[in-house]
Amino acid sequence: MDVFDISKKNKINIIAYLIILSITSISYYLMVSLRVDGYNPSLYKYAYIYFNGFSMLLFTLIMLFWDINYTYINIYLKIIIESLIASLSAVPIILIIFMLGQLNKVNIFIPLIIQSLWGTVILSIKNISNKYKNKNFFIGMFIFITIVLSSVYLFFYTNYANIVLTTIYDKDIPIIFFLNPLINIVGISYSQMIDNQMGYYPVICYLVFWGMVVLIFNILDLKFNKVNSSKEGGQNL
Image (cartoon, rainbow, N blue to C red; front, side):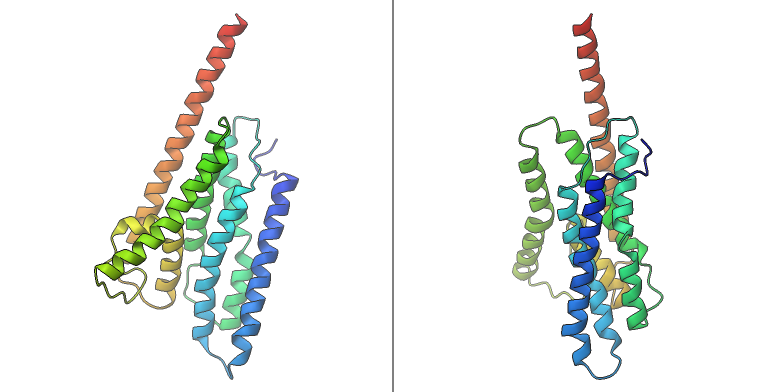
């Protein structure tokens, strides 16, 4: 099987992903943009920010239903490629937002790379946890802690510490919070459109950290497979 072949179930997942994103974008345009007289670029800037935030949440949900029943040695490359393809599938919708809003000088691929890496993390965890009965609970708890719980903690942290935030990539926010993919992708989208105090430092930290996590999970899975193969070989002897 070729690494670029996508199963029927995963193709349906991508189509569902794009349909929901399209409906959400059209709804935003009808509810907000058409009520304003004349051209207002700020509406489209915030549309792009909201789009990336919603896309990350929906992408996370789609990855939970992703089929990873691969039976060949290129499974790790397959996971990366399929996550990247699913993420890049939203490019046409993003370009439409940019054309309608006449937006430019924005690198749309940085948020997509953040999202794609997050998808790779989820699929890597699904792959290594396939051997366990409670895999869905483990994956669900991982996503809940990483996205939901850390976002709630950030809210209380900023309130109790009396921190006044002027942007999402605010220098007063500890860098660990930007390991949250939702905060990071909304942060880079906001910084590209409106304001940025930290440059690309949160993105670099995010990519390095989760890249290492993916590498560790895949190495562990490879070792487990070798151990299981050795045990099966010994039993056959």
